[in-house]
Length: 166
Image 1 (cartoon, rainbow, N blue to C red):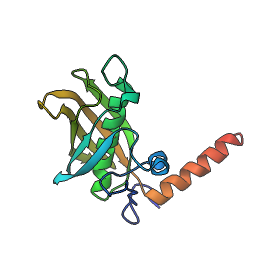
Image 2 (cartoon, one colour):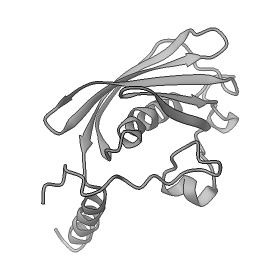
Image 3 (cartoon, rainbow, N blue to C red):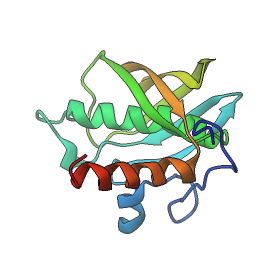
């Protein structure tokens, strides 16, 4: 079986209200711990994510930690293929930090697919401050297509073998 080809559309666990796809930990918590409040398709292979950096991700005074910024960009660029019916995993991610990202302020992240190469979606995105539209960060990433069921089966097989001596 080719691990890159989906056998069926990916399962998209969502937050209460259905406006955000959740990772495993956020499912347990009942909401997105990164502060994502809404995401959706706004055009062909293009999404918009609304979010706000929670205070517990503050780095410098009043400013989001750079790790939070990279994480939400990874989420948004990675959710783009999911929302279009294709599971992917992050292969590469490059973030340009343009301006400090304020905490507890409405933000918007627009992501789009630039192209597909082999089995990878090449995506880009921009994080902006809603009140002014100023660009806070830009990113490019490669997201490898995977079959959701087989991908996690292969992971469990690999980690079991790794922990049992390779």
